[in-house]
Image (cartoon, rainbow over all chains, first blue to last red; front, side, top):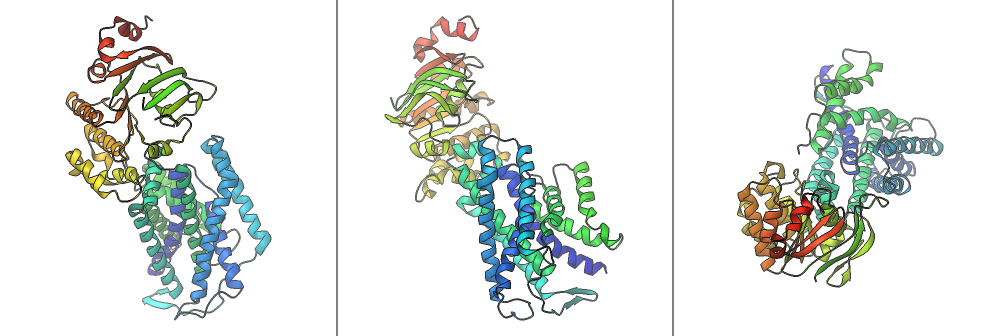
Length: 298
Length: 235
């Protein structure tokens, strides 16, 4: 039981990390809490679903339920979600920024954006649960009592690869460096020759790509529903804040902590209370260590 | 004059100007100080020239070309480098990354320019892998300076470069500024410390309440009792 909860927790945690990184990027570079971020996860999942339901799934690769086609669909979904994030910024957030809107205004606007995004999904795809594949998958017995699906292995591996790639991007590329510089001080970034509007646009692209990956992975290993993003929102925010909003590894650590605690909690409390666990953790962390576990040092 | 600001009206809010038509200029190879009591608008002026504040009136030209209203990142490309008074290095980035960020505005390869900065500031070379937050006050100021120089600007603007530094560290900074000016860079700096500013600058402008009050060579201003009167609020 414990081993299974641990394995499930790590997988949930990995998916949450992908969302939490986006929240962290938004908090540090755009300087507001974007409550619409988890809706981008929903949109990413449904973008990919659009292509898979049109037949872009590919013949299953080994023990997995999907083929190359699905990976291609995921890539396209990532690009479309990044575009969606940019469109939302142009139509809502950028206008507010240009009017020097306060942080609170941006947060409330993001609630509005979240509602619109979520209900457009319901309008287009309907409220029912969807799956990418209905194929049965044989779980692999990892340890006695610990069963893991091959798809879950794949998702975990790809998430680790994405986080490593993002870290390399942030430390080794011009744009990554510009993003970190802007996160610390937009004014100093400007006088250091960085075009902040350019950095903001790329932040949406990166956040959108990762959100789409998280959404698709959730859809693949759990299920898709129009309110999946809304249901992930609290956990993703808790992960970002627990980890210490400001660092990539903080977001990953936060994701793992939230994922693990949600799943381990089911060993002692009824499953229906699972969603309250991140909330509880958030309160405890904010009480004892308000800067988060890995706080950005200045 | 290489850089001229003429009748500049600017402030943090468009309807609340802090500068009511201020003019300053600096020539190639010259060190010009902007002086004045607290609230005179010295920092506001330098920020307005750096493109960080909107201009409500006036003109700013660089070698005869208008640069007023250009965003800050474009000014760096044009050759105007600005070092803010505080928060002038990225504390979460390493020394090397700080220099790289600034060097990225250059086209082409810049590795040799970074090495030139390390040769100029050996203290930084030893700390190139350390984050900015681990530097001492003097080292931070050196890094801020190196960041501004890596783009080889024609105009260097410094906001109180000696603020908060030990006298020895401040002296080192001033020596470097002097060397740069001798190399042909136009230096415009805001200073709180009138004595040291007039000692090592060529000319100075004295502002009060957002207006020009006095201007002249450092030597003439040093002897002028009116400077002290402005600081004491008598004029």
